[in-house]
Image (cartoon, rainbow, N blue to C red; front, side):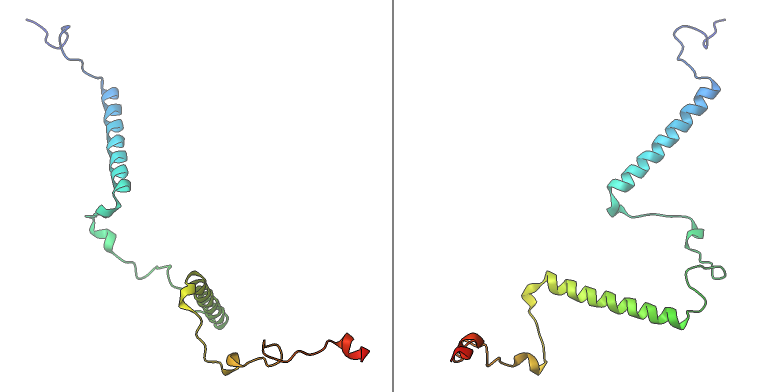
Length: 130
């Protein structure tokens, strides 16, 4: 009989180690392709099927400290106040069309000595010469 596996026209078969390596390479290429598609199309979103991904550990969570000291609370309040002031200044800088609104009555005062319609006064040098 004829041996169909060792004839010249038979398709080439890989050895076991080459077949395993080829399978690993193809699996890595498929994972890279999946990552590239996820990177290029962020609008698709993330799909997960594992139920353990949605669990929460209530016993060993590191997200919240036990007790915050008074100094830390004051420092945190100070930092947040400074951040809010900086945000307000940045908004004022980026939107000059909003204008300045104030209710302080001293801002509406007039300077009667340096206005254009004030009578001219002599300087000290000329006053001393008289």
